[in-house]
Amino acid sequence: MDFTRTEEQQELAGTLAALLGKRADSAAVRTAMASDTGYDPDLWHTLCEQIGVAALAVPEEFDGVGATLEESAVALEEIGYSLAPSPALASAIATAALLLHGSDEQRRELLTQIAGGTTATVVLDPPLVLEPHAEVVLVPHGDSLQMSDVRPEPREALDPTLRLGYLDVGAEPSRPLRDVAGALATALQVGVARRGLDMSVAYSLERVQFGRPIGSFQALKHRMADLLVLVEMSRSASWAAIAAASSYVSEPTPDRATLLHERATVAQAYCSEAAEKVAGETIQLHGGIGITWEHDAHLVLKRGHALGQLFGAAHTHRGAVEL
Image 1 (tube, one colour):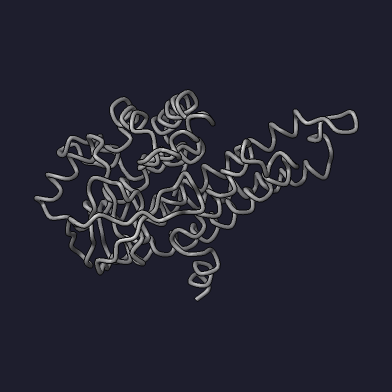
Image 2 (image 1 turned 180 degrees about the vertical axis):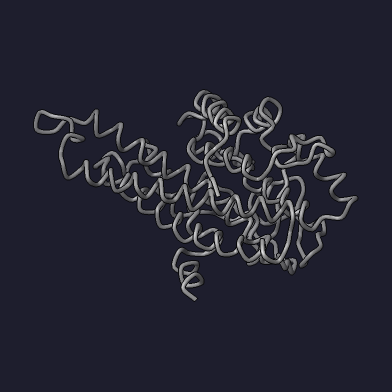
């Protein structure tokens, strides 16, 4: 199977990168993560209205773009790269949950709202809630969904750009839904790993020691080359998992569920380790400045570690693959 991005997907990535480069610089990210909602509502509305980020995987009959989860993952990777706090992951998971388990009435009502920018989230197991301030909270029970009138309780998170909440309402998400959520999260991991690598390469070309840029030293060249391999391999694993997730959501068969589980498990194991490794090396390669609050390297580190624990640690997924 060919996982190469299409011309339209490349254009989507470029458009998002340009917009986020202007609207989600370091100062904007820090302002957003300190706000009550944890993200910039104006930026979210711009992403929804001008690019249709929330509507990408929503069918056209519900006022969506009519694309797939693959396009949603393209958006998530760019959002991950920018470090911008965003409800995009939670909304993408909610869209997948409605497509898989929503009733006809729920799809008509809620997918149309999500496509228009209404924030939504799904209570997963354990009772973890991304974006506890989301306007729509869905509770899965196997192959059905319910809307919760109870608001999630916000909880502090290691990553200040990632808002988490707790809501114990007996949610029982299906295994495919958990796999879809994990696959989508790997797109964010690939994005943050790319960001860490690019930051490290740029700094190594600027920082001068012993009369020459530190990037010219062979030992550092080798370290950054190893990081590039990790980033590219994690991207391949993520794309494979996303393709399986998109295929399953469009036609949920037992064979596709099995393939989705295998690829999502592999991707979560590999992307978690890769993101955490790159994040750690980003701190090291930036030297003393990398551990300061003023530098964004610490945001890369925290997001890399937080995403690596979000849907299970890497060793847990790796153990499941080995079994």
